[in-house]
Amino acid sequence: MFSKMIDNLRKTRRTLVFTEGTDSRILTAAGRLIGEDLIDVILIGNPTEVSESAAACSSDISKARIIDPADYSDMDKMIDTTYELRKGKMTKEECHASLLQGNYFGTMLVKMGEADALLGGATYSTADTIRPALQLVKTKPGANLVSSCFLLQREVDGNVEKYVMGDCAVNIDYKDKLDKEGNVVLTGAQQLAEVAVESAKTAECWGMDPKVAVLSFSTYGSGKGGTVQLSHDAVIEARKINPKLVIDGEFQFDAAISPTVAATKCPDSAVAGKANTFIFPTIESGNIGYKIAQRLGGFAAYGPILQGLNAPINDLSRGCDADEVYIMAIITAGMIQ
Picture 1 (tube, rainbow, N blue to C red):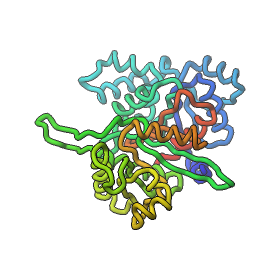
Picture 2 (spheres, rainbow, N blue to C red; picture 1 turned 180 degrees about the vertical axis):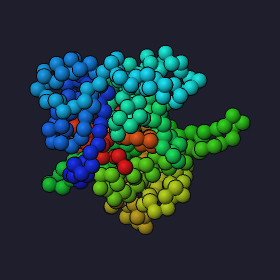
Picture 3 (cartoon, rainbow, N blue to C red; picture 1 turned 90 degrees about the horizontal axis):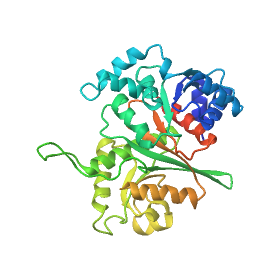
Picture 4 (cartoon, rainbow, N blue to C red; picture 1 turned 45 degrees about the horizontal axis):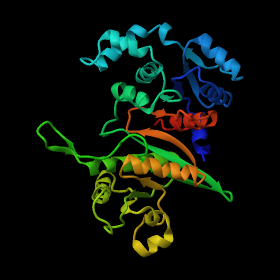
């Protein structure tokens, strides 16, 4: 399912920075990426420790660039740049202390053009990966929030099934955002709509033709309260953002995925029964949903894929293995426009 993305990577050199350069899972994946000549790799860490860790897991990283924040020749320039980005919020001493950490240092390598993308989180929390990205790389023009999605894949009788689910990791819920005077500047529905539009873009990166279902416990108003109105309004707002987007809802999951149920509940929908991109109205439902698919449905789950940032910066699960790191690296580098 990643063959097109891999072909594109071989045509266009990309540099990916790993924030945890001594982790055996990172090193195993990095050695594979280098051996297949897919991506130029930067590993953050003490060169001696990185090399020793690589030798211990029999990973050839001889072509990787290893950078130690404690011995970085352009650290003064990086501190000054960080200070300007964080002016009034961090002193230069605080900037320096932060940049000695792999997550902040790696993010600034992306910001300063030394790397095209970043992958971290093998030992860092999701918050520790997102925080420096928001502070330094920031959201792309037109984006009001950072969101996430998961790619789910399984093979059944030789056929590959692919789905996207968002947001399952970042946004807790979608409440209206107010200014200091109490005026609504961004509705919850507009935020959820942005998650839907960005998740569809992510689906397209993997060669999918996104058909987006915004989910709830109601189909076309069959239920009331809870997230029903939010999901209904998010469909309207998403169509305003991208009139060409194939999106519908609000749907219960069975109406979104089952042609039989769709034929009864919403026979005229272009999405119902055919959806492949699912948007959840809260993090609880999203996180539970993708984990059910993973653990009971036998799907491989890749993510969280972060959306809305100025550069591809993605997060790993701390329970990941080397194969997941390898695939997430391909996904991350493949998101570069």
